[in-house]
View 1 (cartoon, protein in one colour):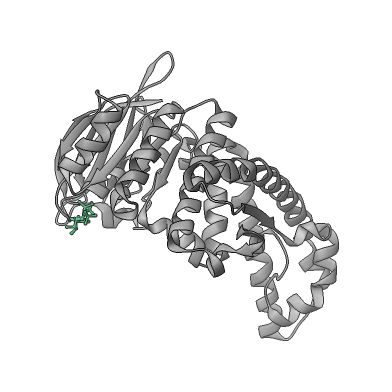
View 2 (cartoon, rainbow, N blue to C red; view 1 turned 180 degrees about the vertical axis):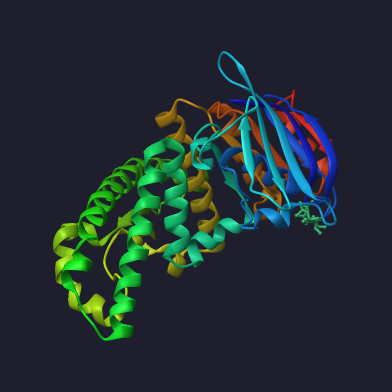
Length: 359
Ligand SMILES: Nc1ncnc2c1ncn2[C@@H]1O[C@H](COP(=O)(O)OP(=O)(O)OP(=O)(O)O)[C@@H](O)[C@H]1O
């Protein structure tokens, strides 16, 4: 899928900006703080309906203004769509496709898959399991529309079970039967999610390994390993066996809400032994594998968003990366950089038709 045109109104620091994009490589160049990343963030909005920087929607309205709008013309295989996202200050966010609002915002996810490579990726290695779970969930959601709904249902039920456990502790009461009402939905949704996560990671891992070899040329082997309580036992048994513990802790201690991804190099966590360069190569391999697998599963080519990639990697690696991405016909690419010349040298050499926008 190709984003042909983009218009921003009052989005972060942009009052009004219009772009007509190349179907291949598009670069935004300009000094620090000019709003290059904000443009990638707007493209991320078009893909998943929210900021990749974790900002609340209201914070993305230009200061002193009452709304923001992101408008785009998207070229599909055989038709064109207009996507419009509006966030007013005093009302709910609306996403429209061809003038028709989605019933649920989640219905939009998967329409325009995207992959972002940004300086924040290193958090995936250093942060807690929650950020890796979110990353995994975001990837699968782009390929499977049911997944997100199952996940929302699961999370709601866990919250209800935890609230009841807390209520029992506070009121010094205990009613096992009321608590067990939640066993069925937790088990049903949880097991479905578990199977999808396990299956997805099994497909992703060899692709990550392959990209890592191409990018690093190193002898070391990297792996992405899925970790879950459900690999050890069924959800029914886990809930039964942890009942007393959950009662003491006043929360549900076992389940897919505790899953994690282990990023390993030669069977040791990359966080512990990977050099800066190895960690960067791993993260890029991970993102390119995401790109490749999402493309295979959805038959749609995700847009690739590369934020500040030159600051993260040396020029040769960036050239290698863009060449690789271009060769594998990954689709439309958006890049930000502070140096026009550097971008021109690398990008124009690879693709004559790339467009460089001054921001
Ligand atoms: N809601 C908002 N209203 C007005 N300005 C905003 C808003 N949100 C962010 N900004 C401004 O956007 C600018 C940052 O933009 P962005 O991060 O896209 O810059 P950049 O060009 O990518 O810079 P760098 O090269 O440093 O990454 C800051 O000046 C910030 O004050």
